[in-house]
Figure 1 (cartoon, rainbow, N blue to C red):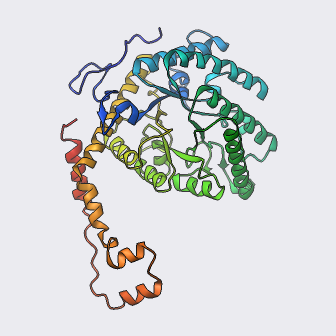
Figure 2: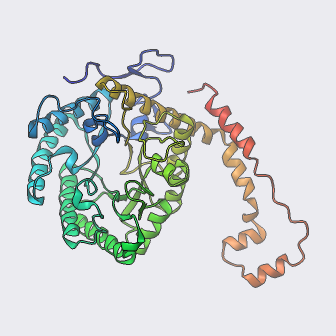
Figure 3: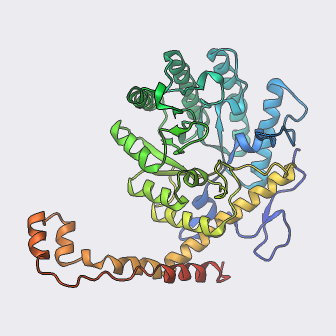
Length: 436
């Protein structure tokens, strides 16, 4: 046993027990689905199982080797992860290939290590019913990927990346994952002086199509995801934001197989709100999954903090509900406890905080919808498109000539108030009503 705490239970909003849920009641039914089904929480292996508090200016502040090395250490990490998930009541996890198995000197050695460790993970899954939400490959950490993976100027690097993704898709099928993620941390450029952007973007599209074709012909029936991020570690990344990724997917004929995995902190770095990125994904028919965290708007880097801002989680869950909810995707906590929160108990407390924040966000999002004032205001604001000339515009029955004739003698055209302050007051009324 790695964690001192027993199973974390729901005790209600009045609970003062730090090791309890105040709002996350996994089996509570809201609008026909349980909280567990609505939220589909997942543990991020890299932050939760491997991260040790290291930052740019200092080393480890905690150890997660469990006093072991080699494959024994990786098995112990898996034991810890599954114990944590059981105690938190989390049904899913996410990982990069090198999170769960050591990287070898060659691709073949790395793939063999991954096969050994996924055998072990599969045995743990059979014991618990827990499975991956999605799988991915780390194609940014090793020095060979310094100039990219699929966008690398070196064809041998492209080939190694292809081999890693092949192995990752095989692992996803083996373990029952319904998602495979591409995050292009090095897919971009630092200066255009040494960059053939057209070739790099074309190669990136070729790579994604290869992955799609391999997956579909080898039993992967889930969703492929691109995770947008504008920068860090690369100055300019090709997966800049949701709109950029949607355009890329359509340009490469991938829109039927790919969705977007939206991360809150990446939205911040792109100069967007979290709910903006979710809305863009949804209106493009590409909403898929979420990396749940939050950033610090006063800092210019990806802090990956556990999400505790209920205003943000409410707006996020409002978008998720409006998009139809999760299918293959879910809420992966791409978040790490702070450097000074350096005990395993802090890890548990961090997950409780994030899970409660999204549970309360789910409750409040449904209250906004049930309240109806915001949706009613939006409907009324756009009412001119439900009849007359507006309806004819929507139906494609007007032309520039016909509209010019219609507008020629219009006088004193008025646009109604946007009522932003009123709507923000409605939000506060619902958020702070105390009703849960």
